[in-house]
Image (cartoon, rainbow, N blue to C red; front, side):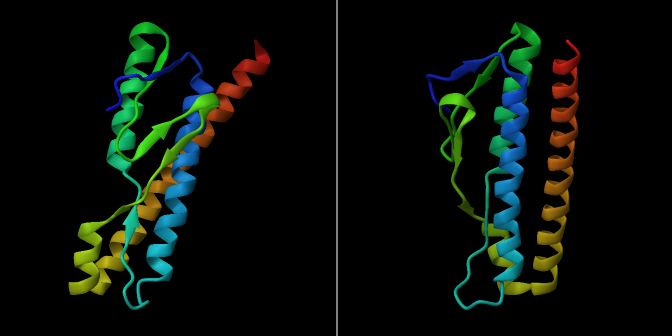
Length: 137
């Protein structure tokens, strides 16, 4: 993790990052389903576990100190004004499944896509609640 983390007190920014991450991940997972029969195709994913760890730490920091601390990882880099980069990684497990069991590969990609959609819906709902609270304040 980066030694010079970005600090913010904006929960909306955090929720927007979660939403954006799930949108980017959906694009990659969709490509895993669309292109799996293409010769030489290698399935990819975003580092969902790494992102979860970063968000968990940020939320813990917010609960304890009322500010959000976003830390970079090898595949996730935070910038100014809520921007961030998330680099796709080769999904080695899916790559093996694609080689050995196409049906299980497809089921896994569908499960990942479904899980990602639930995460996006949760972030959307929390973001709407946060914006509603802001309007009422």
